[in-house]
Length: 512
Image (tube, rainbow, N blue to C red; front, side, top):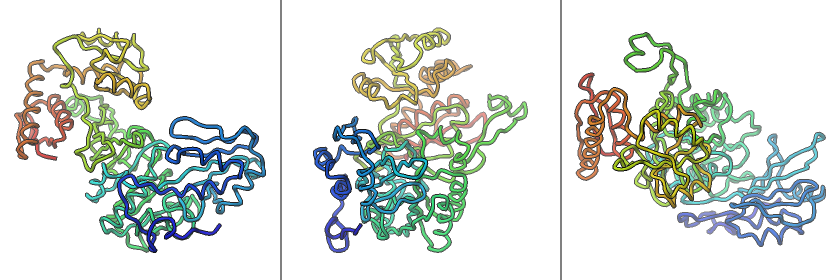
């Protein structure tokens, strides 16, 4: 298939154009003309921003997958002739059954029968969307290695593509894109203009991605390497090797959250790996833990982790090591939830903390997709001044499973209730107890008046630091109270650092 001229599609004779926030380049007409004539009109009737994929399965009605729901394109079943027509209009399928249209970002994935004949096709609309990394641009400017996490279809590759352009063009770095399925820079030998002046190395076979990653470093002296879908132990090892040579890495991996990655034996090395350690009696007593614990093995390959919540929102863990350590100690890692539409951490949506709960009345808790009986039992065991409610609009706090946190019904309920959302990983009383203890500032062996004093101190210090841009040193506190103050500092977007030795160990608060 002949590659269209970049000038005809993207602007001037060099293929460049003026790129503004949320500019879209999708070359949708080239995808539509690769379809049988009977489907083209039906696809053209769909608003382009809504279209995600076209699914053609032998003997079934063709469907369009949209941002919300699906649409049947015709009542006629897909035939071998329809599938053969599309296959003839796209590039050659590689070892992972993916192909593309030269000069575009569209991707076709094939399903084959036992004899190797194509019996199904998924045609994914590829788009260059500019402005998607603005909330996390500060990470790339800082020069740290960044790993983007998220399930399929949330925009990982779209953000990776723009990161390549920003790093190469705006930050003037030597960038190499390792493009395994030509997803980042499109099909054909000429990279798509969406990656700017970044260079692209194609991977001849998916099994060779790790080797091409190392080859890129050894042969082309990059300052930055861009990689899509790190998924094997070899690729994780290659990524660590590259990072140890001082090259900035920007990559993606499948996974809903950082916790998933920590528990993934194949990819946990990307965030430092996990090892089991047996402590002595004295050390276990000082830490307040069991003798056998899990610890991080080594420094993480990636300095920062970005969980892509949806196409408009991300959760950023600026310090991977600290977040992983929190997970291994049984705590919820605290990150900054950033919304699309503005640069840097200033766009963070404030996370709920213990101090946000009203304590002048019985706290009303709405459990979403959780055992209400178990939650009420925990409330009784902790002797909390709280009760469950059956409607979110009556709640002071909402409790939900992490796996259900993005349910549309829950998100609508939270918006209507204006109540903070607290997340638990499993539907167990132990998880509920830990979250409620944090939310209600329950610290074993610490008087409630000390808790409230520590909270007032950190809140006053945070306000002073933000208003006057100065450093504030807090009074010495026991470890449990310092952990509480750390959480409050993170929520106020100030830096908290522990200094000194026990019993005089304390926090120093300074601007971010």
